[in-house]
Length: 121
Image 1 (spheres, rainbow, N blue to C red):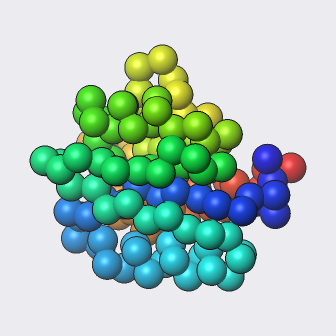
Image 2 (image 1 turned 120 degrees about the horizontal axis):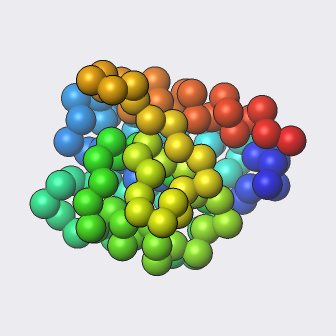
């Protein structure tokens, strides 16, 4: 799936991160430039994740994996799934993870994910 074929993306944003507001603006601006409908879901560790199941691409900027995240990803009918941490059974098609003992801001991870996605042919 090329980025030009995508009409809707659901992004799971780590709302508890220091760069949450900046990441939200960058995500919105990126998909607005591409003319892609965005469903933005703000994820907090102790809250239920309410993500839209019927989307073409599911993109998770959340740097941790728990049962709520796994449930959300597995229930999604997205054709392409991108994440930061692979889950059991490997439901993500593309994973951009942090090196061990390092944690990058989600703005940087999002930029790298989009570089990779745009290079896919």
